[in-house]
Image (cartoon, rainbow, N blue to C red):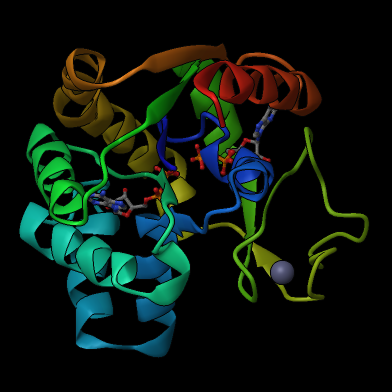
Amino acid sequence: MDVILFGPPGAGKGTQAGVVSGLLAVPHVSTGDIFRKHLKQGTALGQLARSFMDKGALVPDEVVVDIVASRLDEADAGGGALFDGFPRTVRQAELLAQRLSELGRSVDGVLNLVVADEVVVGRLSGRRTCMGCGATYHVSFNPPSTLGVCDRCGGEVVQRKDDEEETVRARIETYHRETRPVLAWLREHSAVVDINADQSIDAVEAELRAGLAAMGG
Ligand code: ADP
Ligand code: ADP
Ligand code: ZN
């Protein structure tokens, strides 16, 4: 199955993606994670992406879609994928639909994490991310067992540059301007299940499980 995990930055997509992709038995494809990997490796793509990410702006559609298309060519994505942080513009959604249809596939469903802006600001400014494996934590809501150390890989847990308050505001504006309209497009083209993401991590997970079951996943 091909499923989109949709929602504003800070909604909890990355936090929930592992469980959802496990249930679907498809890989978790996060465009943000792919860009951060390139940044860490110092590739040209990483440099390009950084100039947009640091401002809270979107990386150009052609760049993002190329990356997703090559990710879909990898063997593990042959039976579907869980998209996180993609599509973020209507153009990306259209190009994804086109690429999937070339593969004889389509978007089977959308899990839409619904949460208010005030909640998202608190989540993003308290978010801490592992430099080693990308796992995310929160200073109050989901701290690692040892301060600054990743539970999963022992890596260093730090604040992402774009999680500083000023960039967080810009990212939320970008979301409302460019990404929110994608939801209306998705509602016209596939089954969208709305999930109340303003609950505990466990309660959101339970709603996602129910949503997936309803979707036939
Ligand atoms: P996204 O991938 O949608 O940007 P994340 O999964 O990284 O969001 O979550 C953003 C921040 O909020 C992280 O610090 C995470 O630990 C925290 N978080 C995620 N889900 C919840 C929740 N249900 N309640 C409280 N905090 C949460
Ligand atoms: P979050 O879920 O917290 O918003 P992501 O890790 O998904 O963060 O994205 C971080 C940044 O990477 C975005 O602010 C944007 O600059 C860039 N990015 C990620 N995915 C996309 C995409 N699909 N289209 C354009 N830019 C993207
Ligand atoms: Zn880690």
